[in-house]
Image 1 (cartoon, rainbow, N blue to C red):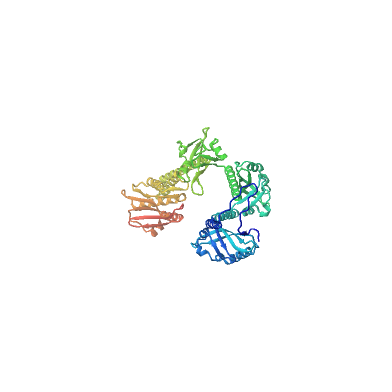
Image 2: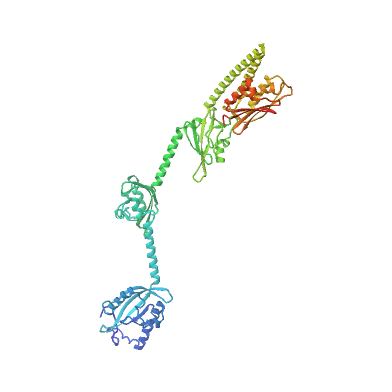
Length: 607
């Protein structure tokens, strides 16, 4: 008989009590014991099933029906192996046969039982057998206990542990566990990737062995081990297996037991080499930019979006005559500002302030800076707003160009031009006077005519010269001023009383065009007064100089009978001069009749 088998003894009376103890009466009668045993079997808190040597159910209790979801009639007589899968059935059958044969005392197994309602129940099954006094098999007892809740809870715990392990292993950042000496107990794949070491090479190695010598802080680590409230987050370098240093950000925490004792440390490490290199590149770029700005001969400073100074170079100090105050000085580095006309210019109305307020560069303005010692410096500012990647205004940069020398040069140039103009004007007046005197003294009509023509031409050239001198632009002159000046000169030179009317005039014309155009206009006016109106006191000559697209058109119109250009050209030196000068301008000359209109069309040399 195997140990652990249940033996049904033969009926016998209770043994006599030990000496000195009162006798105990006999227990319940056999029938009463059967009823009590049956009631206990039926109402046991676990499922109890009796099966024969073939595995056929002989008897089941109420809990067996409850757990399986089947009635007593459905269970009794059926084979307990029927609801096993093929592989599971074969394993269970072999264990049951060994139990029946006495090779096993008992066995315990867990399995899932499908219920008729479609649900499943997990049970723990303890199987043993009942034998007679001779050790012969009578029946087996299979005791079921519902462990569904515990099983599912265990499965959830196992699943969570598995998920945590997978998350730990495949996290995008390096995670490791260390003991109180800093030795690595566990590492994930990202730790291996960052350090270049395999898992086997890292386990047992101290974190200080892979930390750059200059960045090792053993004291901070020891403080964290001893004091759980001590935070530990640091950026440092680690040395890879290949010797290459990498920048990492390490955040460390500790795991402790209920008594607060250190169990292990958790280190989260992230590769920040690219960020560090980008920061260094930015710092190098800023330093190079500052070096470049400092080397510039022009004053340069920057402000934030509110206009407060954030940087200035030495040239700005020299221009302003003072040391600007970062963070407090606003809009400008200078002591006081003035407009070119000398009126005060408030700092909040200066070009830099306008550039920040309107978010646009300011160009083509001038201002005057006054130093604390009272000296004034004319300058040209170039304020330009600065924006971040999102297009938001973050500040501005301004460059101040000292134009003191240029102003002095301009003043000197103006003096030279004034002197030159004065000399040219005097020379032309002298020439005009000489020609007029020769004209008056000459007894020859032909000579008088030639001298008069020469005098009028000199006068026209003098008028053009005066226009060039008064022009605001150094390269071009105004068509209206030019036309009025030459026509006024012509009126003075022609004394027959004819009216010369200046009509439309517009545009800026290149300086190189002035002298040829003045001579052409003089010849056409002279011809119109002499021949067009034929000396009539009520005669009118109309003149215009207007833009026509990319070209200009000069016309002289009178109400005379007109003339034939080919025939007149052969005997008129004046018309020959006009046509030659028109070709010099790259233009063309034409004559129309009724009314008589002489036109010179030429392209604007400055267009």
